[in-house]
Image (cartoon, one colour):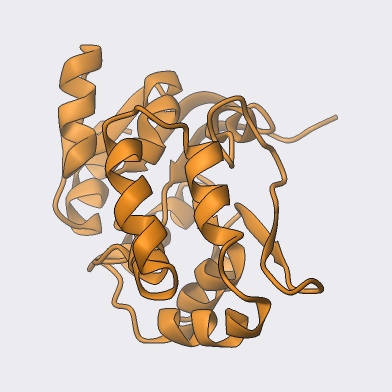
Length: 214
């Protein structure tokens, strides 16, 4: 029988856990021309994440993979994440990272902050470097997303789902969740979709809200 929780947290990585757009920044660094061409179409929802992100990633030479991980090495995380995890641990609430970005980058950042072993799971894009250029593999590819966040959520059984995000990659996850913490572009998308949300600046805000309401 699969484990079931009362509450579960699903959290985006890029621009949510990291204080800056780490994955997007990497794409702009290693594939500047394609990124400049494709990124605006993603934000305007004219091109699917599945098509756009795959196209950019698969234009990057495999020889760059080490540099990609190095690029992620010094990226800061938003304040309060260890403290939020402390609170979630005390309540037996799992914290699952779902990223439309590269799994190796997610692991690099979390490991540097000593948080890698504290997350219930990491769902993100796997990169195969056996060919001349990156080959993209996703654990759960969706119709429009490279990593289908709602399908990832369906792998976990919980009475209440909580989503934390910041951008276009988090729309479907947020629409599915019972409680949404939104910042930056995701706030605008939530207003368009008429979905209620809690605005947040750092993870202390989220912890303080959950302490009062869970």
